[in-house]
Image (cartoon, rainbow, N blue to C red; front, side, top):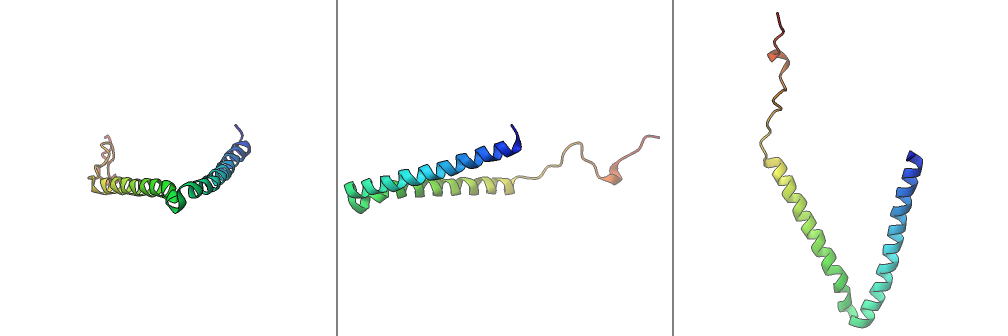
Length: 87
């Protein structure tokens, strides 16, 4: 797939997903607030906040594991002064 066509397709998919998300959210909020009042916004905000906090904790855990691992050198790596030439 040519590069220009690939970037055009990915840009169009991203833009259409943003537009669709905007439309669904705006109409969904109207009906939720009409039915449940201001408490209807909690149906959207609580899952979003929960997912955000879980993802932040997950990535912090991965980052901490990365920093706590002991760095082991590659078995075939050698310093230039350790290399012995034949002869």
